Image (cartoon, rainbow, N blue to C red):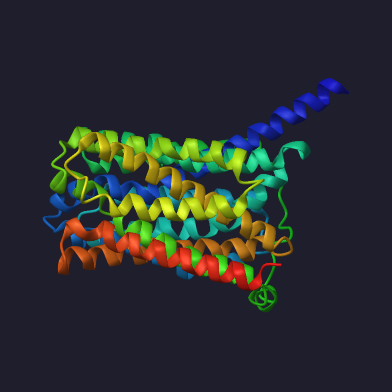
Length: 390
């Protein structure tokens, strides 16, 4: 009996690992244009500021479709749904590889964004369902670590491959890995009927929870502030800091590595000091962006700023995801779909704001505007917390 329980436990942990690997793939493909923006722009003879709009388009498709698609698929069995999502995901990456102009690439990215909209709406609750009973929180942490490793490994490796073989090779590799993950899902996951996903009737109930609404508003503002700067960090460090391309790749690696540190700090510090944890993360996002331009010529300091900035945004994202799950235990998929949609409004909004800053003020000033939005988010959080907390 003990051996049988041990076998089931190992299988459960392996299923959690599959979800973490899936998160790695989805996060890698979402943010890989940040690492390849200049190369993509050059191949289509476009300005970087215009090519960056593909980040906005992707994010806004996710933001608009997360809740509708989650509601449309609310009753579907989850394993078969995940397999269908990966099929569309893989086909869209094939189209990316063969895109003969920017608009075809944009269409392929929209296809990927549609799968993203559903994936992030349903997976957090599924991870907890398949995990061992005594490892639910750790399973969610491993899932988050998969997301963080996309920044550590996915973006730098994707950039290295893109520079060596062309950006199309990066999209091809993502598609191949996604195919392997799909086979693992088919082989390892059990039958997963829809459960506690919520419905359209959940929306009025969630709207009456001011702390949850506050988290949603905070997400939109803070993530917009972060991506105002981060969407264009690659051209910033190569043009303003005058870093060589290889060093820019290393900086992205450091930024991603910080996500692993953030996951560790989240597990250690957040349970006992959740409000202080969140406030420090917001302040860190603002301060690091403010210092981008003044310290842009100090290469070693830029690496330190990237590391601290990465810790803060990863820690913030984990803390807000946890709060959404805690504030909506009766409708986790609906609440998470809304959160995912708003998060991507922030991504798209930040990329668009950064685009406008580059056009009207100049690339050097993206950090200042991003920091201003982060500080606005801090004011929102403190106001909501003081007014509605017991």
